[in-house]
Image (cartoon, rainbow over all chains, first blue to last red):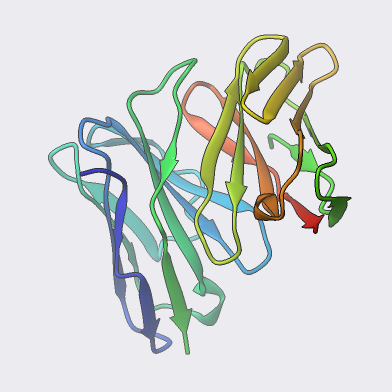
Length: 115
Length: 110
């Protein structure tokens, strides 16, 4: 596609429910990143994929968070048993490759509200 | 922990002036640096990347990098009200993880 696409744009869920957030990267981009941005805050790294592998999961806040990527394309971030502190904008970015001169491009984000 | 520090602002400049945004980073081995613009309620948009010491110009934007001082800056010439946004500095670590500063809010007053 022309850009990184995320769905849904907005998600309101009840505390304790599971949610799935989807990211469709720019076609041909091998690297994919998930970040979280709380209101008025900077971007918090969650996880990165190179192809279907996730070499770095160090940013996942707890074992309630998981992510996968299939076919070297679409990625899903799953949050189980959501808590109010999970409320944030979840941003996905992709880049053509990892390396010295890679550039990352962001999707529009998914705004998650846990009530 | 890799630190990327920015003054949160807000930085207020009059229309037509030069806006100067600054960023420092903690990791000496970082090689790649980026500036993103984020309008309120929107996602970050890449505006500049810089990899070598010195200046890089793109239209009204100039990025400056000083690796010895671990300092990167963004100059916006002839600032316009449409430049009002939060500017995020990003540093690429280990060629595969982007660390972001918390951003500087810029207000350009007509």
